[in-house]
Length: 357
Ligand code: SAM
View (tube, rainbow, N blue to C red):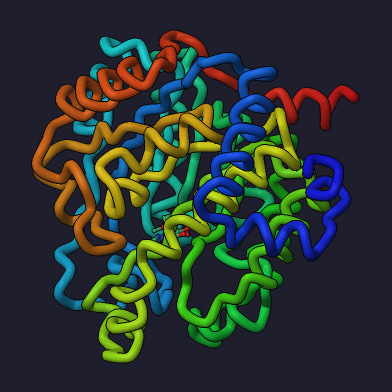
């Protein structure tokens, strides 16, 4: 199985992407062993601050798309962000992730630069990840010089055809890909990912996604299941609503298989367990951490803003603060026999191999 997966044998990949029961258990066991050979039972923590939901993009699946007039908008102040950083420090998370909608205005860029500078100056040992959409080369260079060492930008799907169906005309797959390449040129640790279970996505598309990940040598992955949101073009379509409800369990199972195969293909990359997993199963993220993931990103976004950063429906933990999110997930991790790691950045071993050979 291992050799055939690594050779990208199409029949084998189809078989394991669709696997259930005994075959699925075999795949999970292989992925778990491979993951533990590299990372043991260790799980690294990154505190994620969702500091603004203002977005210029209009993705057909996303709740914070610019055309969703029902969504109240917010932008956290530097003081509020600083308070989140204090929590991250007290909880001893080794890294922070700054995430927001995508903006390319001068004001936004300056604010983000300030945030990164402040963080790096006050907490020089904290790993800094940025996830704020497509930005130009010169600006990404400035962010790096200010202290950001990682950038997360999901390609969303490797299929240009599907990308076109999910985004308005002004958004370009090629531009997003170029941004990922620029991040690599700037020696960031580069993370990408897709959504699994998108309307119109085929099993063949998922195989192409896996090939795309391997061919382009990414260091980290944030991959999540697609979750419907009623105030989006996809979520308003009754056919998609029906399809999503009917297929959600099957799609979540394919999602888990996809991550397990990714771990088999790339033993030493960082794989995060996405919050969206808990929409399908209260132990969704833990399942991912058992079989493939080595990174967890508990939210440290203040309670007042959590219900305004709704990319999808039924987002878990929106009524709890950073301390509760921390407590819940670390307890679950320990109960699952895994080991939470604090005070360490948990950089991607694949990155060091890519940069230094
Ligand atoms: N603006 C940044 C960007 O474009 O990369 C970061 C924020 S963006 C909202 C973060 C991710 O949320 C997207 O890359 C997308 O994969 C995910 N997302 C958006 N809507 C979703 C949905 N309905 N279900 C699952 N994930 C979703």
